[in-house]
Length: 147
Ligand SMILES: Cc1cc2nc3c(=O)[nH]c(=O)nc-3n(C[C@H](O)[C@H](O)[C@H](O)COP(=O)(O)O)c2cc1C
Image (tube, rainbow, N blue to C red; front, side):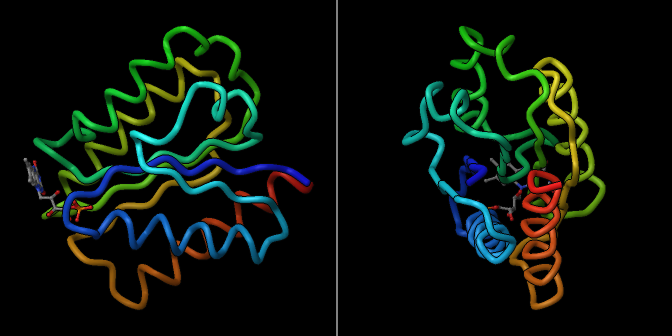
């Protein structure tokens, strides 16, 4: 069964709610899901995954230093991730800054050579609609792996 890895940081729980909803959607889509905080995940997890998802709060229009610290550790294996699928997501105080964080993730994924199949921006705590979008994102990533 294809494997999805979701790595996230969340200080006040908003990004974590998105991460959990994405995981639910992906499971419904029929793939194996590993949901890990930035300090629990390893480079080995990245190598084993068929799809890699990163989630972070927006801090100064960028992913948080916590999530970035995990990304920086991937420098030893980043060239072995090419061809995997991926998506990323963030929660911010305003949509404009959330979009800027998504752009930063885009640069990271272009270094990895990952095929981006979705992204999600949210303002503060996700409501019902954003949770539904997050589940849909999970299902979309699962579908991309099963195609
Ligand atoms: C250090 C720090 C920096 C932040 N910088 C921004 C920012 O540049 N733009 C913005 O819209 N929100 C900013 N925020 C607000 C958070 O992105 C927002 O509250 C988010 O929902 C928190 O996600 P979390 O609950 O997953 O931690 C900042 C919050 C903190 C603590």
